[in-house]
Image (cartoon, rainbow, N blue to C red; front, side):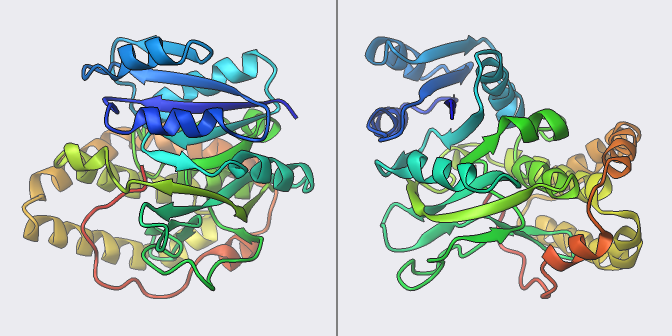
Length: 325
């Protein structure tokens, strides 16, 4: 299986070299593509100088996470990739991280995405083992802040994969499409997992594929940027993907959670970002409805199956926005 590994870099000087060093040591043969999203901190020049074997794609402007990784994925597909891994520039991979993801994908032809045990940098607590998606419309990372020892130790099917450390089958991408660039950043990995599930592909968690992540090292620099996009994408995600019967069944819960999200935003002085996010969602409604019609017309699984993979527990207190990327 020919694998390309895509790393998106935007002003990642503090972490990207450690990241790329770990990828050069991977036990599974692969090619690395770095897409630079218009960095201005010297990280682009450092990558160019230190890693001559890497395929470096330089962009003069920031295309967001979705647009940036799509550039790398398209390059990989054009060069014959069978699968494309995505890896955050603020993460570090164990030597067999990629090998174990590939092994899980090879042995399960119905699996479109394999995701890893993404640890926090203390190597004790979990960052993510994939994503849940609730009937309230709110996704959240599986296992975040739990101790890894004794938890999440078996390979299993899950709802969604973290875009920060996952492997995507090209055949699946060609069927369901790449990342939705209207999302720009945040929840785009949940969206592509949802589309994969609707098209009949499975998402698998592989516990032996381990990596370590500086949580929100990029997001922490961006102020209300993350809240704006997370709010916008919260609404886009549900409108675009939730099948008809479930859409109407859970719409009251979804709207209630949207209200809670709005209140928490104003309490945390992010009210303007919330309103801008809702406004942008409204602008995107016609375009998103067209996407929805295509996605739902191509659905290959039952509504009952989708309901079975949703998380039905009630969400607790809304935490501060802390996306995976």
